[in-house]
Amino acid sequence: MISPLAYVDPAAKIGKDVTIQPFAYIEGDVEIGDGCVIMAHASVLKGTRMGKGNKVHQGAVLGSEPQDFHYTGEESLLIIGDNNDIRENVVIARGTHANENSTRIGNNNFLMDGVHLCHDVHIGNKCVLGIKTSIAGECKVDDFTILSSNVLLQQNCHIGSWVLIQSGCRISKDVPPYIIMAGNPAAYHGINAVVLQHQHEMNITERILRHIMNAYRLVYQGNFSLQDALQKIEDQIPMSDEIHNIINFIRNSKGIVK
Image (tube, rainbow, N blue to C red; front, side, top):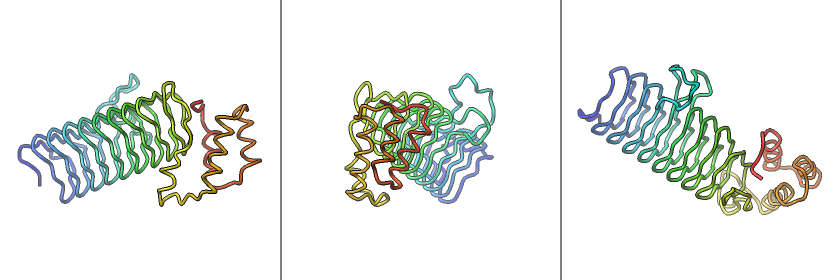
């Protein structure tokens, strides 16, 4: 399953049923879980820890040194979960420091051609990152989020779960859960209703959907301060896990996209 034309460092830990195609490059201090496929000309560099069932396509570079002036050569990590599809020419950097804030990718994500994840980025589960999307250092993207092609996230942004950010958006602040962002400058374009209604994981009823819509109407379309909008949500909208999630996200945020 490992081509003699590939370079695999003897110190690398390779699981069962792993396929490594010709001209792939695997450094030492690498762990590749069972059933992974590393295609031709892909590079898996030191500090990369990969779970099971991942597919890494041609030209991808995993575990590159962080492009961060604070990086001093520490043995930091890139930790990847299971069943991720990492397409051609994706570049994912390790963390800047040797601690738990290393770059982390969850499970069942789809990273399209040319995606770039900078140092200390955290991606949740079942996310889609579109062609040429770039995520700067220390950003966090929660579960079930879709970033369309050519989306740019500036440093320290937090993107909530079930968010859709449309093509070409430049995001410089946090984006709360369940909404659509579009345009430049990026702005609120309603809630991600179509996706929410068709996902079994959420079990969203029409009633809950209306509550989410009303909550964001107060945040984005009411003539209130953010704190007043949150208070009105608590006073006027029946509480649910989704509404609680919205309130907590905004309260803990350093600033949301207006």
